[in-house]
Image (cartoon, rainbow over all chains, first blue to last red; front, side, top):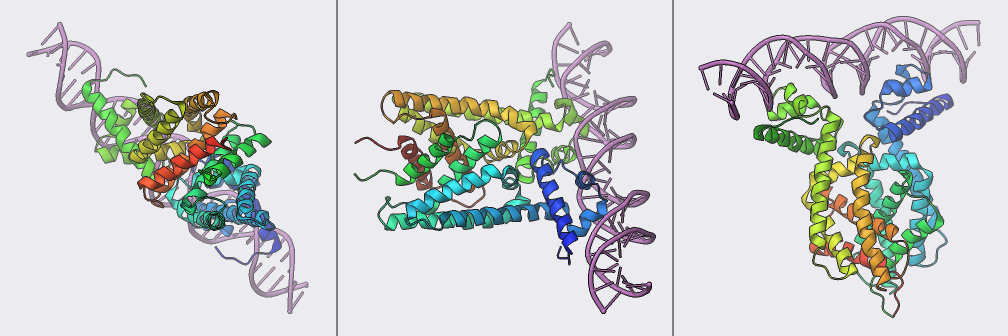
Length: 198
Length: 198
DNA sequence: CGGGCACTTGACCGTTCGGTCAAGTGCTGG
DNA sequence: CCAGCACTTGACCGAACGGTCAAGTGCCCG
């Protein structure tokens, strides 16, 4: 859907995405109907289909917006770091913090990863972030800061740790205290550090 | 649903769970209808509701069966190990291997974790497995094999790594070679090992 | 102030959903 | 061989679904 939108139109579109994202995250994508979304905003059903071709396109738009924001945060966090290891650590922290702050986006990512209709769209963005992290791991290897192995796998391992941690917090099984975050960061760093020389 | 079942009845119930599990994993829980399930088996709709109260109960039964099997495998893997660290490593390997072998169960676990209607049922089983792993981590700390920290968090970190790895394999983004598994196991072990003395 | 377009309305559509049930069918133990 | 129960059938139900559309409404610009 590529329509000319006035400022008012942009605002409406934002409202729809915002409300839907919350409902999708709390109640699930499939169980949330288009009727529920438009009623939540107190508008007619036609409004929805003025801004989106389908319910599916709506979720895709939401996911894309979330990925864009996450990616911005990660880039910002890394600038200014001088060593590869510092970039890795800052990247981990940024990912955790963003995911903790954006519960709705995070949960939608989790759902989208389990559904073929959305997983492919998600994959591209995830791969970019992983490749970024893998490059820093690779740099650290070349600098002799960590032993050689598969940078891509290590990056994925870190993603697994942080994702699971955030998942627990959002399910209310864990409190997001500083030492919980430190534990995860430490686990990742020692994980990539592996068998240390000296 | 607790009904007296003959051997034939047990078989039918198994068929329904088996077929549904595959459809749920491949096509998603919500998009898969009860009609599709009974048609897949070539039986009438009443058959479904003879064995299950609802579609929701069916998935719950499937999840419970999967958790039971995983748990059995984990217990079996650990017996015979002499040190806590060995138990941890064997537990990790067993979890990865089982999850790789049981794609359908694994993907249903992933979905169920994103849906409040099923997440609570899943949580209990997951917590048992995590507490088990945490106990071995705790034992290793007492034996002085690894530095003191939060055993429960470390166990969850390992779960995050293994889960993400298996997820990648099942999405076809990674091949399940030995060194991929070794990488994950190593990452976990060095992660729990942390800053080593000597 | 008027024409045009961005936007909104809500009744309506065909389809499918999860679930029910009265009426069978066929194995099984007495 | 028959009674009874485990099992099966499939038409049927009301509700809800995603999506359409003809008929407005109101803002903005010339």
